[in-house]
Each structure stands twice: as C-alpha cells, then as structure tokens.
Image (cartoon, rainbow, N blue to C red; front, side):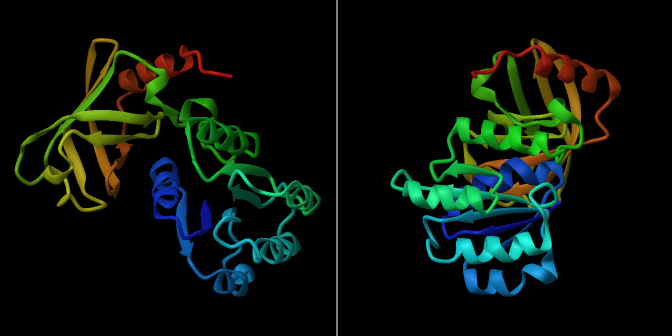
Length: 236
C-alpha cells in the first residue's frame, strides 16, 4: 500500500511506520506540504496521513485535489489534529470526505481507531488477525532474538503484534543500533502462553523500537498466535 505522510513530528512518523511497515505499507514522507500537493496525481497514494497541527493551511487544498483523484472508498485520508482543533474545521473535514481523525498524541486508542478504519476499507491483508494490537492489552507473551552480527541475546518488550510481525523495544537499544533494515534474523524465539516457538524475521525498521516482519511463519506457530490474538478481549 502506497502511503503518504505529510508531517513534521518525527515521533508520530516513527509510530505510524513501526505499526504499518510490517504489514506491507510503503511510506513517502513530505515535510513540505506544497511539494506533497504538487505530487498527488503522480503518486496517487492509497493512504494519506496529514498533520493539521503542523500544516493548518494546507490540508484542505491537499484533500480537495486528492478527492479529485480518488473517492472516499478508494483513497483513505486520515487527519491528525491537536486538542484545540476548531469545530468548524472538523465540520469542513467531514464535508470534504476525510475517512477519520487521529490525535497527534497517537496513543493506544488512536492505534485502535486506525486499525478499525483500515479493516473497514479492507487494507489489512488478513482481517482481524493481521491487525496490530498493543501488547499492553495482553499477557503471557515474550520475545527475544540473537543479534545477527555479534550473537548476543537481545531481550526487551513487545509493544504490539499481529500475524504479520511485531514491534519490539529492546532493554538496551545501544546493543541493536547497528542492525540494518532489511536484515534477516533466524535465531529468534516467541513465547506464547509458555509455549516456545522459533521464528525467522526481517527487520523493516530500526529506530528506538525495532519493527520486524515474520518470514514463513510455521503453520503451528501461525495457528497458535492466531488463536491467541482472537482470544484477547480488547478495550472498547
């Protein structure tokens, strides 16, 4: 999925990429909204995140042109807003057919909102099972891997997970800073309710949080993880 970010906030950018890159979304970043507007027709993105907090005067122009290219069902436009976003601007956004609002805080409920919208418009390849759920809502789930270069054991915490991959916050990020994006890791273990599975991975992003995608997840592991995810009870 071709995805455009029009945003200045690096933390929000990293959060969105860590959740969506493992699911196959490809990102194009613009920190200049005028350039983003100029390139709408050429890029024709499937999904857009536009930060009204960063660029309050440009999002309507961008959205007008985007809707000339793609209808609300064909192109997903998410507007990121701050707490002081005016009601009249929110009304204009709805009239211009945005698909949804996200807070610039990008907390767990914003991620849930995003997952619901992507599922509604069939942008998640495996439906509910491939949605990325915050691991804070789960228990009995652990992950570790062996560093591909120096073979040190890397421990930490899962921040979210799906059937497609997971995001992981290392206990000591300085030990993983040299791992390249695209690197394959063959010595990793996923513990699901005290059942240990070996998994192969590809690193799709390495910043403070490491995002990885599972490679050829074995059928038994896939089924166990699917049952685990489907058995969770998430906040409404």
